[in-house]
Image 1 (tube, one colour):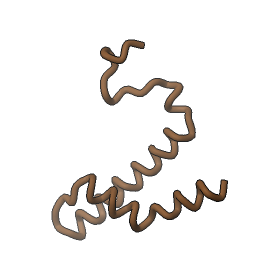
Image 2 (cartoon, rainbow, N blue to C red):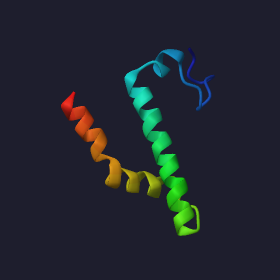
Image 3 (cartoon, rainbow, N blue to C red):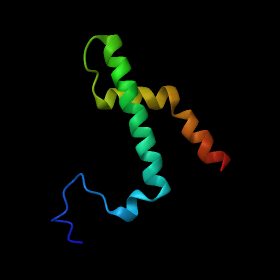
Image 4 (cartoon, rainbow, N blue to C red):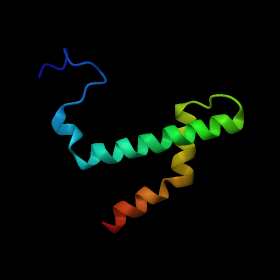
Length: 70
């Protein structure tokens, strides 16, 4: 596939089947939910980067423990 013709949001079907992609999708969904709750609590949109960093500090240990125990 020609990379110049593929849009940024398109992902090859074989990539979607990988464990790494599925795990990232779960993490991204959790961060988006966290962003929504924290933005509601703050009274303004805290932004993706702040939400992602805050989520990793608070809940990222679950990922590290899962990867170590495998």
